[in-house]
Length: 410
Image (tube, rainbow, N blue to C red; front, top):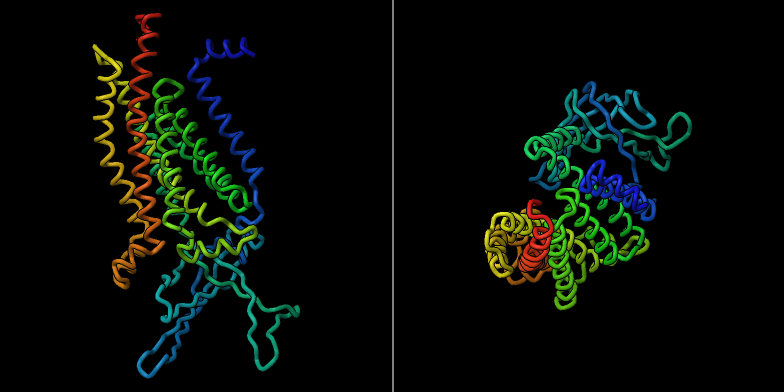
């Protein structure tokens, strides 16, 4: 086995072997993990949706009613012809109903010819007296209804532009970044989320997926070298600090996980999901990217210092690394806090208008967002000195050792 590896090293290079091995390991991890964590509950909603294209508007009927003496509510029913583009009815032309009712705050855009939409077939029972309406075969009548406009096509074009820009600007490193991003997304949606639904230990699965993401991303992006090792160690320390602190604060602040309706619905699943663990996992996953960014930036800068600093020492490199880290702390902390605020901006505005300020900041919904931002920032603060210390030690000691063996290596 060792001879085979030596042969590969000589033929295609050590870093390429590690790069390919990391990709192969990631694929196996995803395949095996997805198989172990597979859940038949994922994607099994009450009704199925199919893609369709609007061909023709058949009719528009408008009616209305009074809620009270002054409030008139209008209702418009649009019936149109569409062609189904997937599923068992692919290619069929169907009649679809869209209801637009002023009673609801959300008013979907009225369909037009050429629109890409999602439709669903739903059974209905229109009764006259005690009799239920049946079709010609004696079954409950069904009708096709508009579910939503299909926005995926437009979103895919934007995603394609995003990936194209990454490759155009980042070249080979950009391709590796896309690869790491794909593996990360697959790990979240095919391992992490299904494992939670299956009832696996959320704390353990968060640690496994986070560790995989850290190692896989940094090795694919930068290869296996001193810089990557320093970034991984700093990253792991930052994430560990954030995880321990989140666990403590969950207990001290008596976080229940009953943040909003979607969280409450998780308790009715079989098996029921531990909401406090979900909050903990969300904090770690949310902070992981920012901590990884800071750790890699410092390790990379320390590598450049090592290559250019003439009279290097552990303390000189450490001081330089801390100066670099201080610059990164402010921007990345702002990034985290602004991301959390932006993600729940509408909710914060609504609550700020309708709630007392003291009550607002003690609501669990707001408290968890603040907690996530603060703990994520503390994780960054922990990663900065950790990465700087490890990098100063590694580059000062081991690079000197390599230089003595082969002075021309650098």
